[in-house]
Length: 319
Image 1: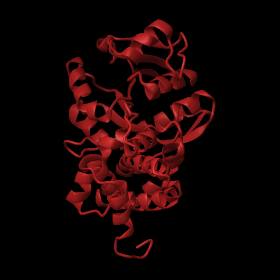
Image 2: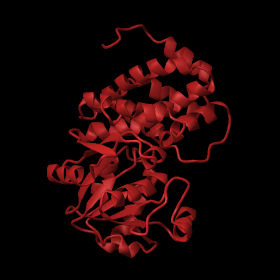
Image 3: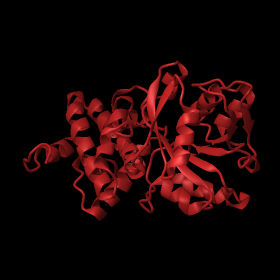
Image 4: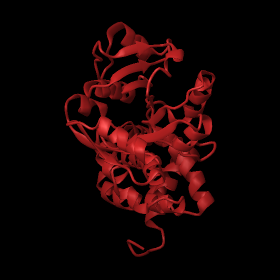
C-alpha cells in the first residue's frame, strides 16, 4: 500500500518506521516549522527511531492525498482543524486510519465520528489502537493491537496488510467500545500516576478492576459492548499505561499530584473533561474518572478524592 502518515511525534514516527518495515511505500508529513520534522529532514531521526532512506519526508500538504491510506497521529483535539486544513484538497476514496486515542471535548464525539463529519463520504475510516510503546517496538519487543472499522472490508484489508512478527493485529468488533475504551484508558493512566506520586501504588489493582468496570458501563450507555473494556483497547493496554516508565499519562499524573510541571502531551487530561460531560449526560456512574476530573480541573486534593471514593455506599462488586 501507498501510505501517508500525518504527525511526526514519537508514535507517528514509529508507525512510519513500522509500515516501511513490513513493506509499504510510506511518506511522513510534518509542518515545515515543526522542530520534530526539521530534525527528521536534517538527521532522519528523533529520540526513538531512525527512519531509513526508503521513507519519504515532506512538508508539502498538497502531497498528502498521493496515497491509498492516510494515517493520523496528532493531538486528538486538533483533528477537526486538520481536516478543515485538508478540505481544499478534495480527498476522496481513501482510508483514514486514526492512530490516537481521545474524545473531542467540544462535541463529545468519537474521533471516527469527527472524521466522517469532516470528510467526503467516499472515504473509509478505521482506528488503530492497543498496547505498546514506540521505544519497545523499535527495540523489537512484540505486542498485540486492534484495528476496527464499521466497514468490514477495510478492517480485513488493514489487518492483513499491517500484521507482522512484531505486531499481531486483531479484528475489532465494536467501534464504539474500542474508541471509548482506548480514550478512557488514558484517564486511568493519570489516576495510576497520581497513586505513584503519593506512594499508594498498591491501589493500582483496585484501580484497574474498578476502572474497567466503570468504563464498561459508559460503553454500554453509548451503545457499545461493555465487554470491549476488558479487551486490548482498555484493560489490555493497562500495563503500558498504568505501570510503564514510557507512559505520558502515568507520568503526567505523578507530576501533577507532586505539583511539578510536565510538558509532554497527556491525552488523558482532555479526555477526563470529555468523559465528565458524557457521563453526566448519560447518567453513568464513573467515580474514578470523576475524581480525576475534579482533581485536574477543580482543585480537589488527593486525600479528599480517596476519602470520597472509600466513603461511597457499599455495594456488590460486580453489580
